[in-house]
Image (cartoon, rainbow, N blue to C red):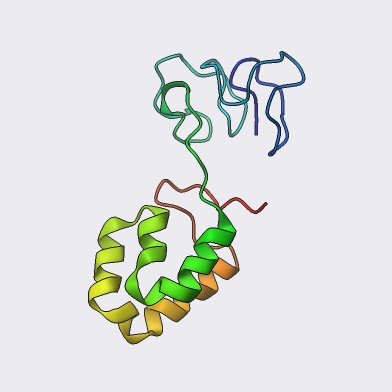
Length: 126
């Protein structure tokens, strides 16, 4: 992860950038994912393609939360709703997790951290 203000690398759990002192996530000059310079009104980073959301870091979804939702409520599609896949969540709800097959596949994909959120970001492990 990179500082949106100065482009310096910052730790995943850092609250402030050690280079410029700015709170992590504030600023609009650099991409939080790759550190490339972006315009202040940019919606996506031209270098890596992630959404920079006009100055805000879009919150990454938590892997542990997604895994627990998949284990206990996966047949209802709650895991897909959490990850931002609304239509797939509804389909999973209506089919009872694809008669359990879709639920099992999603459970394995989330456990292996191979299922990104709807914006294409990997799930964050704490």
